[in-house]
Amino acid sequence: MISVRNIDNPFKPEEAKVLEFTYSRSKSVREYLDNSGFDYKDKRVIVTGKRIEDLDSRIEEGDEIVVAPEVQAPVVAVISFIISAVWAAAVAHPFLFTFFVLSMGYSIYQYMNQPKMPDFNLGSAGMVEGSPTDGTGCRRFRRSVFRWLSFTESIVSAVISSISFFGRTAISTT
Image 1 (cartoon, helix red, strand yellow):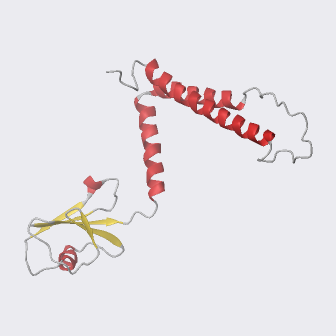
Image 2 (cartoon, one colour):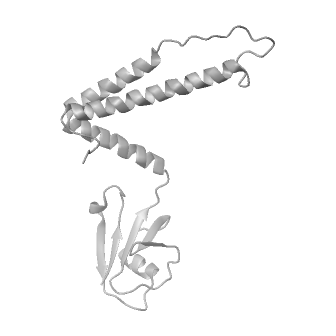
Image 3 (cartoon, rainbow, N blue to C red):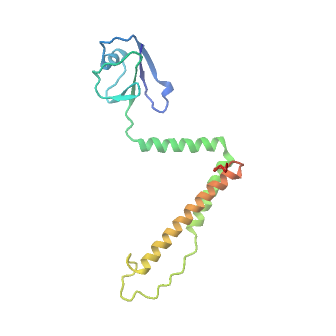
């Protein structure tokens, strides 16, 4: 038996339409697809887990032909997955999610309102102010790196504290 599966939505493969045909050594992939009636133009054709380009190739007994749409923007799919995961967490654990959002907000607030570090610039003495080659520019760069690291540290601590607040541990000590 040869099964032909048409997946319209790659995020819901369980909703795919499946047809089965008797195996014939003389039939190609294109003939099985034509017999199924599924639209396979501008779509991926996968035979038993391997994408094929040549639809005139022969297949073996028990193979499965999958027709799936091309995913044009995988970044959109990843962002959609992340948003869905965050929404699922918010619905499943509303208090945990609220605490996490408040912790993240406070971390951003702390980062934005850090006190300015003193600048011991005693004059440029002919150097261009703010140039990346003078001492002032290097100090500014180091200061910005230090602020970024402290911001990252506050975000990580907010995540860990929100997880451990509800009795869950993010890192196993065993």
